[in-house]
Image (cartoon, rainbow, N blue to C red; front, side, top):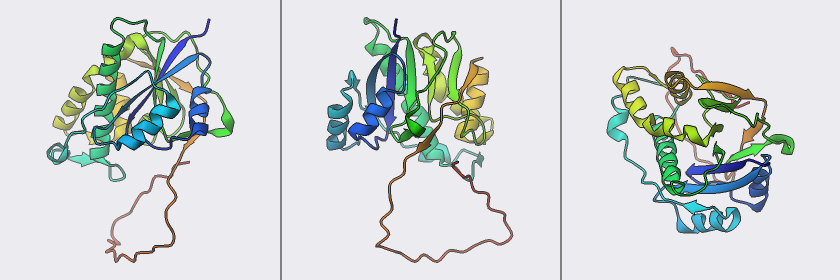
Length: 237
């Protein structure tokens, strides 16, 4: 019997072609549904395009918070990261999970929840193979793009574990108060450890789609370079 899988697309919506939809829908063995929880300021035309292609079971806009004051309290930010983007991302995931929980309160629940980015492109049309009998407090994560901790771009959990993520923002607030190193992947790694969630690594391979830059317009920008500092760059392999 095929399992019921719910794929969640949260926050900023990108890349909504029919081809991408078919790739996502055929990634898993099971009955796949989508739900979309975009930012409240997302253009309605973009939402309508996603709605037409993905046919989500529900769409719920999420308010995008102003984290400018909170960012000032971060003592050790990842120099290669975007603190505001990190706060918005985890806030959208927590809010999305809460909306899903409310939606399914009196309905038949899915077996699995998939946190997925709409700009993920599977390599060679491969499927995301995972053990169908995932235990409670297990999470399936591709074994790549871990950077400073654990890959936060895509993961799979049992629906019954959805409440574990309701305290994500509280965990991050404590993280900031304790003046810990602020990196999205590191926060995710420590959150899973705190919640005693066991990681199951997957060999699923993919890349992140990027918008093409307009090469016709070139703007020269003068930059001051501090030669006394080493600059480390992350390479998205």
